[in-house]
Amino acid sequence: MLLENKKILIMGIRNKWSIAYGVAKSAYENGAKLLFTYMGEENKDKIKELISEFKGSKAYVLDGASEDELVKETFTKIKNENGKIDGIVHAIAHANTEDLHNDFILTSKEGFSHANDVSAYSFVLAARTAQELDMLNENASLVTLTYHGSTKVLDGYNVMGVAKAALEASVRYLADNLGKKEIRVNAVSAGPIKTLSAKGIKDFSSILTVVEEKSPLHRNVTTTQVGNVATFLLSSMSDAITGQVIYADSGYNIMGV
Image 1 (cartoon, rainbow, N blue to C red):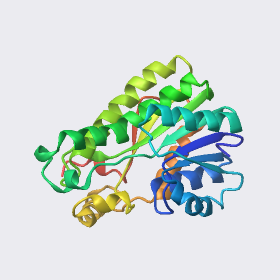
Image 2: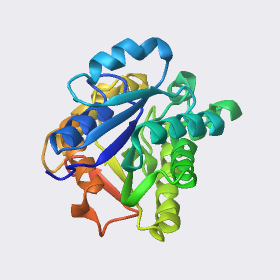
Image 3: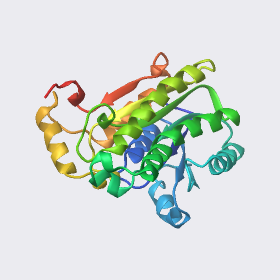
């Protein structure tokens, strides 16, 4: 098993339809011990039930993934209770609804800052905090989730595309900084999937149709497939890969039309 005896922290799990859940399922099936962060103390029972199939897993509430002190407090607790970990999966992103539904040019300063803080800075913060707390084992791997809208204009993605572009640039700079410590940093660019977050994107169903029609494999991807790519990046099988954006989108990104 690729992740046997590895401890992996997955940030941002919400429900069984989320990509984070697909990553968790794949990592668990490959031998990982799982730790989670989630948002909202009121969701504690729901998350506890959600992760119950992953025996031995633990979940920690984190209501501000882009807030320095909150992340430090939560990460300190995670390390104190579990020791060092071998990987972090960052599955956190958010933009205001109006900034997805209106033209991009109408994005407010607050909306722009919010999307970038939550979707990009939170990954930088997680990496920095884990390093400062000496939380990562040697050869640890950090993985974040991105999307094709970071490099192409997609109607309704708007400021989230800008935030994902910042996230992908952050992956490269973090890979350089952390490579000195033998820590790898990569991103998985998943094809469109019907998640709770995707509901905020205008005409999302039409994107699914286009990918099925135009991608080389003529099919959409599943959370399980994306999870398997993340598991590979978390494992020693990918120990020569860092600073990369790996597409898991049935090849759609290579098509010109």
